[in-house]
Length: 52
Image (cartoon, one colour):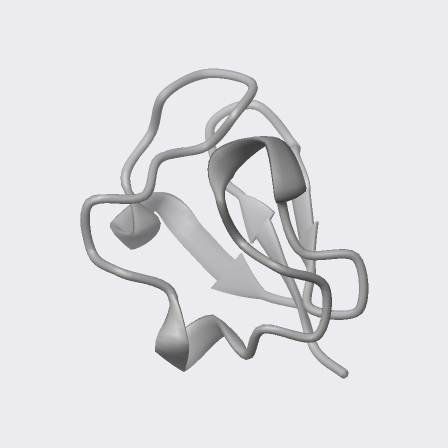
């Protein structure tokens, strides 16, 4: 499972954990997250995230 870092606030999206509060189930690959999803911490778009 991969992780992606928000380059603005430092939030880490972990594919294993997902973002249940944001409607993203655990185990959801980054590529399958809809483009309208935003960082739950700062509201940044997916474009602000970098793989780590």
